[in-house]
Image (tube, rainbow, N blue to C red):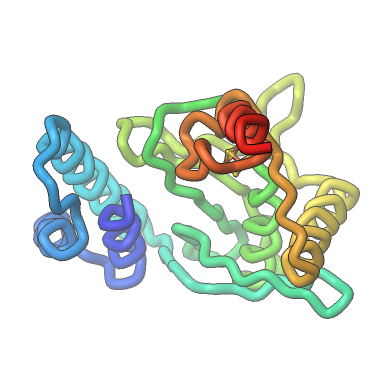
Length: 220
Ligand code: SF4
């Protein structure tokens, strides 16, 4: 996954062709890919290559249409002295600079619940900073699938993109500000849920997971 996201960033940064992007992915895979043979290693690599080739073709198509594609870090002020740095996977700026689409590139399959991820509020603010005066559209592109990017803030009835309300944006700032304050204070309270915990590397030791609770009972 790390190999893939490294190269996806370079595709937008350096406008890599498909061939160059695939060469870079192979280099990254040799350097940082799985070191042990695993039954799915070949499958993971070929899926990564497909995603890289699709992303490079997408960026080339956008550039051919006159858009500028950027991968640039932005700093979002959260209040109370806290700030978040965020680098959108792709900022797609129209030729006339009147519209900007800020894209999050994901490798999995499409999911409606992904649209509610809080990071989308920060992506919206990052695009506002990158292109002042333009109204950003936040999108998810599933790079492993041959699908169009989908907007995440939409009108309920029509599904058309719409800007998030000021209340939504303020809630997202508050969420990340409180998270930053919690980290500074050393608060790392577990938040167990049935989806995330079984996939988490800390599952067997985390006091918040069902497995960790069992271990705690045994040791007490
Ligand atoms: S196992 Fe613990 S750290 Fe991991 S997702 Fe669950 S609650 Fe969070």
